Amino acid sequence: MPAESFPSLPFEPFKTKVVERIPNPSREEREKALERANYNLFNLKSDEVRIDLLTDSGTGAMSDRQWAALMMGDETYAGSRNFFHFESVVRSITGFPFVLPTHQGRAAENLLFSTLCRPGSIVPNNMHFDTTQAHVLHQGAKPVNLAVAEAYDPVSSEPFKGNVDVDALAKLLDREGREKVPLVMVTITNNTGGGQPVSVANFREVARVAKAHGVPLYLDMCRWAENAYLVREREPGQAGRSIPEIGREFFDLADGATMSAKKDGIVNIGGFVATRDESVFDRLREALILFEGFSTYGGLARRDLEAIAVGLTEATELDYLAHRIGQVRYLASLLEARGVPFFHPVGGHGIYLDVRRFLPHLSDDDLPGQALAVELYREGGVRTVEVGALMFGETLRSGSKGLELVRLAIPRRVYSASHLAYVAEVVARVYERRSTVRGVRMVYRPERLPHFTARFAPK
Ligand code: F0G
Image (cartoon, rainbow, N blue to C red):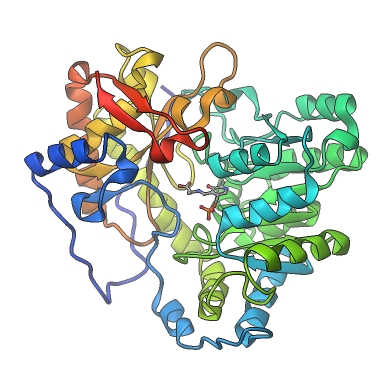
């Protein structure tokens, strides 16, 4: 196990103004809920969940300034002043001149891939996330994951496991050329592989290779501020810089980006696609109007754009990020103390339990990640998500052994340290009785994005 130092209690740089009651289902109720949900935690009702770590997407708490921004909604169909504010904030953060709002990240993915990809295209990424992969496939294109080898090693303490294997990318581009590869994507942070950051140095190399082949480079910038915070801490020469400055290093090297503002925009809904290329923008805008809405609202209420404009800036504040990433590390320290195996080093938005070391008695056929997620809910009403064979099928695999993880994603500004202590206790209790955990089998498998709607039964 690599030596990592974890801080103690993360200081909340905010105080509570509104509270929401937390449900507390009994063991018997949890057991019934599991049965009713067909052992798929996406089918649980929120009232059946005590601590919800299913996702950090759209689940954050907005600030008083964001709630106030909602009241400034100018619900004009075309030309709302909220759009121009939103656009100016996105431009000032990214430098991309052409910005289109979308209702969330996958809508941006749909617009970008339907505009740039054809059947038979190849889209390299460090690692595709689930909807990104599904949208590439939906165009008849092929997603290829090109993260460095360490990205698949849950134990190594390599600081930039989100990095792209630049040699592999160069080889792919040499072989296939820009005819076959309409864009290169890089996801910051790498959500599929443990929320791990990409370094500036690596992204610079990626940009050099993409440019040499004449292939546009796009960022999946959902968690760009968290990525910049980790760069600031870990990359030589980056320590004194601000989050926007570090972010700009990435954006200046890219041709555009997709964004789910439900992450580092700290809103409950929203996203965008942005580009430097006016001809791409024209085509994206046509698709946007067809599928989402006019280009100054993109499927959102205009007040939502105002809340995004505020949230995007709040997500770059150092005390906010210190607390956010401090929470992840605090939970890590509690789990480490109980010997629970998880993906190292801990990244930006959650803990990823290392299922192969957690449940060594289960085989791949037992769907061990799903089995563990079910067990954490059964033990203490904690909802998590499998990130492994079920979510990604074979594409996540590298060599003979693929990653099999269970993600505990921490919503932004929502839970306290005592909630995290409760989570650690639940995980540790399951770990102590791990040999009693049984596998699950899939009794219904949908064709696409199976983890959302599959049904399971205990083995
Ligand atoms: N890209 C990444 C890296 C993501 O993590 C997500 C969503 C998306 C794109 C799609 O954005 O949900 O707004 O349509 N991730 C969520 C998660 C769902 O749980 O990590 P969306």
